[in-house]
Image 1 (cartoon, rainbow over the protein chains, first blue to last red):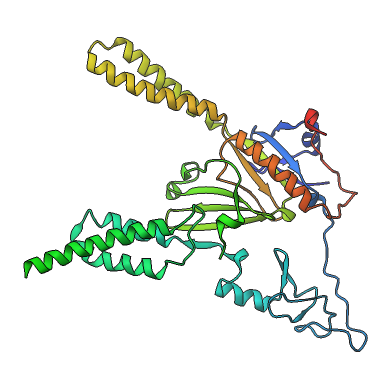
Image 2 (cartoon, rainbow over the protein chains, first blue to last red; image 1 turned 90 degrees about the vertical axis):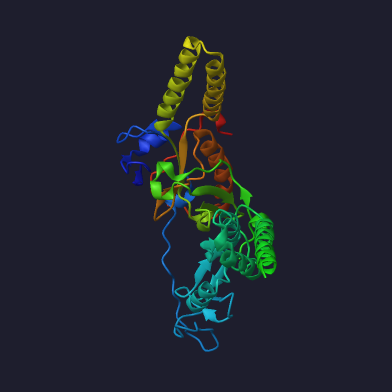
Length: 186
Length: 179
């Protein structure tokens, strides 16, 4: 018996409801629902099948030498057993490589957060105009950010270099106004 | 790091602000992107983006749920339009009539656009550990369209899954759409 629950109120949905119609109402919250199941819902749970090294010449796992190696780590090339292998996309990695690559942010699949430096630089450059006296501090910061994060990939919206370029131009203009003011004052 | 332009396509929907969740995330925008083997739910606060991936091989089911608050927003917009029309007919000053005409036109436009988009709804992704909705999809029509696109890819990704035959298999009656 499969356990299917309403995604809104967590009320248990009877299998007959799912079978009977394309859309149905939840008995708990009355929401109109449409459910589409996939084979993974009824998949047979797999337990790790560990084979032991029995004969000489068989490759053992790097971490568990007594276990027969099934694969090699896609990053370091060490032998890994069923217990050690971590599936990531189409690759299989060992735990130490996964941890190292996660820290160095070299695995795109583990990229879960990104700071949008283009938006920050653009906002600082634009908002500082409202309080112009602060631009003497903010303009160098913006120029530093543009140079530092020029090659940093932008967000899902698209190219970040357009905003960085505009921020750079505004900051340069602000600095040149300050320069004229200081030179003119002298 | 991921290059979004090369690896992802936009799935559907327009994204939403966080009003339906809480005020702290009011300015957050969501987007749903589609890769070869997963869905990427992008939540952007303007200065930071957070990503959530749902791999096709792990998805157990998709839900489309219709939201009730579409009726309320439709009713409120209708009241606003009718109210403005009533005031417009009772106005006598030329300037006031012009201003009211513009306001009525704007509200009528919003109301018709709201009707055109159809009822609000959510697309929930069910995996073995959680059922979450994709905030980037907020209309029932977009949710159903996304479900159709995703179901083909998910079935393809799960073609080799060994199914437990002893379990009851609740297959929805697809009616005339079934091929």
